[in-house]
Length: 461
Image (cartoon, rainbow, N blue to C red; front, side, top):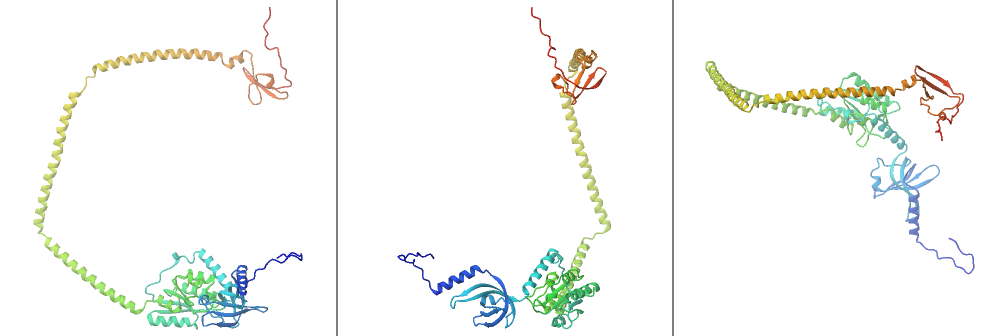
């Protein structure tokens, strides 16, 4: 604001605003200046209010900032932060108007490092999807009644106990083969892929379960490996992925033929319950008996009908002879009637033709006369045309340039083949061709002279 320095001038009136308006203006300014972005720090003074809102301080070695995550956003978080947790929050910088405190409103929260892992997960997922590993056409159907089920997991994993318990409860007759492998650790991915390749190479089972219990994204990271994905996609038998819990998704899930929410669900999908088998068999037995009974009844009824229709062979032969004679009579009448009708029509047409046949002898005489006249006229015209052609040939011979050359004249052409008609068309130091009656010669021009007396002037009296 500018003020006039003159003593007799008063400053312009300045608007007065309230503290609330000031804080609201500052909050709007902060929100416009700092869009949503990820911020990393350590959780401190975490409080979960009765309303469901989360209040905590996000700090690092040199600074701290107050943070709030309202219930509508906090309910979607996959973990509850604790004191000292390293986290990354996606927040909007703002101002709490009631106290004038600068703070951040948290929209999303994740454990520190998860962002880079998630980006790596997305890149690998897009790469393998582009390579065709996740296409629905690659997915294979599970066998309805598997005899042997393979399990790729750790022998100490709780997931193995869940799978075995579910299979024992649902299908105790199914044989289970364990392909042991660590499911967590630095070299776990390569060992998981090797176990899947071993199961595929041996071909001992009808369906393969790849499973482990739930955990953080770091715990499940061995199943987000490209080698594991290709091992699952190239496995000879169908693969069920039961990694983590319902909300956990891994690359192994997308590459597998079927994803299960949990290891227990994977076992339930792999094996049909024994009770269902027995019920299906009983239903099949009932259907088979019913079908056999229906077939027998139909056969007996058909036999009865055939017996009623069966005749004595002698009577059947006589019946066939009678049909044959009837067919012969019908054939004779069928052939005779068209022939008779065609004969009558031919006689009728012959009579009409004889009545309408014209007399052509007079016309033939006239035609002979016309032919003679035409031949005479054509011969006379040919003679006249031949005489005219002879006269034209004589005239053409007189105009033949060769005859002119034979009288001692010559034709001069330049280097381009054009006929020279005037000295102006010639240039010194150029060549011309002189065509004579019996050949031609090339001549170099040393000079050109125009003779203006070439045209004879008439004599004056």
